[in-house]
Length: 273
Image 1 (cartoon, rainbow, N blue to C red):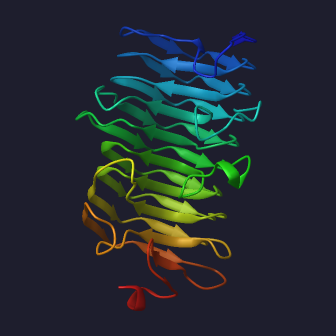
Image 2: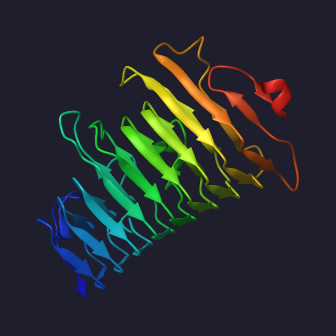
């Protein structure tokens, strides 16, 4: 077990395996800032990453985070729109940061559950088979346009998000200012803040193109939370080829809420389309 590492920065991890190394069955808990960074080409499996001050875990180029428990991080209530929450993988437009986040439980974090931010390289980003639940914002003051999602792809390219169970988050799965994102075969339940699924452009990045939302189950979205928000192609320049089909929406109470980001609200698919 690794505990109580002091840090003067949110972005400095307590533990950082790198260079094809393996971190297995370790507990990383109660650290001042970030608990774990899985460095380039490294793998972390079956670890418990809990109660850390800002961020639970971060990933780097060709890294893998698998079978881990990432729970109750950002205990210091740092701004979750920076480096805080469950898992964040972040880079710059010049860096090919990518990897695989799979088969983890990501829960009760203050901030996003799983987040790829400014990962614009060609390498494939994979988010699959995770149980992502009960991740919430500290305050709506720090929300993104899409709230504080369970899974968030932001200003990035080439991501597969599939076979995830996403339950009781402020938003479900979002892709913002991103290209070549496939969101498929996910089950999204009980979203209770902004939107179960959202795809939208962003003024910080030129394009939002070639994104697919397919074969997802969206169940029991709560209250006035949107079931689905899409970009309005005629109003959002550089947005094209957004494909949405074969999704199943079901609510046990209330009405459906479908929207275009720059348009009105519809309560059924026929009117929305």
